[in-house]
Amino acid sequence: MKVTHRRYVPASHAHYGGSLVDGAYVLGLFGDVATEVCIRMDGDEGLFASYQDVQFRAPVVAGDVIEVTAEVTRVGTRSRTLAFEARVVCRARPDLSPSASEVLDPPLVVTTAVGTVVVPAK
Image (cartoon, rainbow, N blue to C red):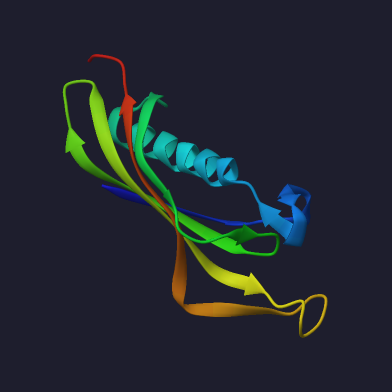
């Protein structure tokens, strides 16, 4: 099973100079997409148990349109292992004008991770 969400990153989420967004923002998005995986597979929101191998590969900045995907890679009795990927699919171009933006083709992979969620026993 694979679930994907997209979200615009507003300026209010910029935390550092250069409109940079902190890495925790993407981890929160991973949690959201993991919740939908649990609902679809198990009829329950589940709980996040752990992250392994989180890799911040490129910056996320205000004005990005970010796409996050969770794919189930292992199903246990109560646990599910998920592979996560976050990609920037559109990016602001303030060098052109205050509202300019462009589609990135190919998208820019910004964060990857592996996570484990748990759901109630059936």
